[in-house]
Image 1 (cartoon, rainbow, N blue to C red):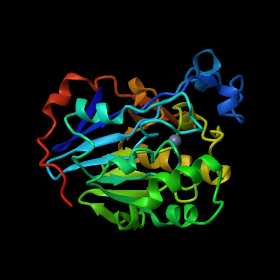
Image 2: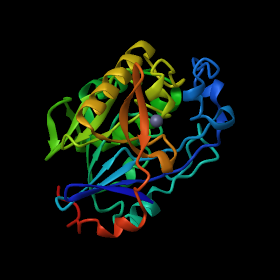
Image 3: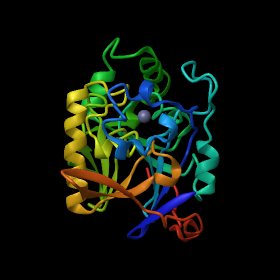
Length: 284
Ligand SMILES: [Zn+2]
């Protein structure tokens, strides 16, 4: 399990589950690998390997989960998958019960699944995202179904927030619309950017016009990717990406040619997670 320190906190890359690899041409219909052979190196054998990866921020003020995976199983859209977030949290020194706050980047099916099992948590989502998904027939049926199963039952534990305003000390959303109507990244203390689905693969940092098939508004998603990469490079933020394979989960964005490239942090290590702060548990 990989983790990195952020001040007195530690950020863990968790893996709920991993779908089977798909052809790059299926997942990224706009990607012409021959046109950008450098970026194509991120798709070995022209395959897209991904995972559903929430992040856990362990800190003395309480554990914060960013997104909550696909869930324990039984999702008809992913019939072959069952998530392991409960075990992953325990490996990182936390548990479903200890999570006091969940911050959503957006409300797609692979980001909301464990919400009903996080019984002590408050949940935070961009107002624009909830306003979209709370309308009837707001999108593809597997997302609409996930909202009904996992989000609607949260009632007054679901809080609407505006990008740029602090949700918890040092934690705020950064608008990165396009992948979904209210999609946001999560910024931790102006030091770490948890990118949500701004990028599904590091190749998109180099070629922002390569949209994942799930991007709901492609031109807006492309513009968000460009803006986020420039900001992350300028501010030297640690970048954390839940759909990158686990060994690539943490990195920095660096200038490269006319654009940017992804520089993986290779020394995010398993053994350092023993140094995680001793969280007092849920703070409601
Ligand atoms: Zn996703």
